[in-house]
Amino acid sequence: QVQLVESGGGLVQAGGSLRLSCAAPGSLFSRSAMAWYRQAPGKQRELVATITIGGNTNYADSVKGRFTISRDNAKNTVYLQMNSLKPEDTAVYYCNAKIFAANYWGQGTQVTVSS
Image (cartoon, rainbow, N blue to C red):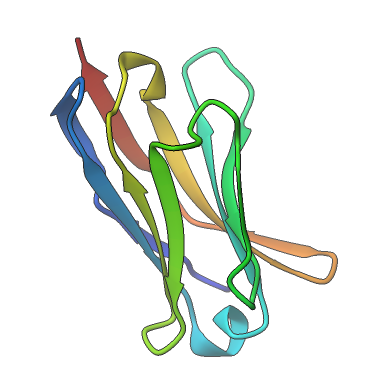
């Protein structure tokens, strides 16, 4: 059972910052594109940001300029730095590892942004 372990969620006021972390097994991380998704209550899960093995990144329009995805290959960890948070960023955030046709997910971490 592949396990992705997320941390860093919490409650923050609008305009504040949080950094999410996701640790993965080394054998998986080194061969995987990584991503962060989120799911707000009553809504479908949506893609937030992706990063390839080589470090190329892509972002949802709603978070461009505010969020930064990065990966530390020595620590087998992917990060999501979230700045200028808005109430609409409130959601459960999920880490994803994609290798070929397989997807692996973390358990999710709650991010709540108060107005």
